[in-house]
Amino acid sequence: MDRITLEPGKRGGRPCIRGLRISVYDVLAMLSSGMSQQEILEDFPELTKEDVLAVLSYAADREHQVFSFKVQ
Image (tube, rainbow, N blue to C red; front, side, top):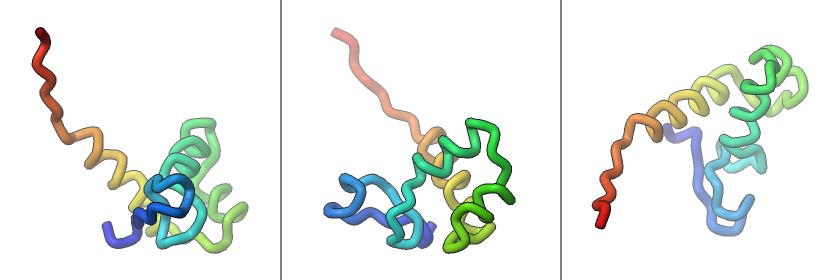
C-alpha cells in the first residue's frame, strides 16, 4: 500500500498513486468505464501494472472495512 499516497494539498487530499496527480478514483473510473489495464497504462505511461493493482487492493481494503452507525 505504499504506492497509495495522501497529500492534503494534492487533488483535494484524495488518495493518489505514488504522489502523482492521478487519483485512485481516476483509475477506478477508467476501469469501470470499460478501459482495460493495458489501455490505462498506454494512456498514462507513468503508471505501472503494480500501480493499477495497488488501486484495486486499496479499493478492496476500503470496501472491506466495516463502519457501524447507531440509528436513533
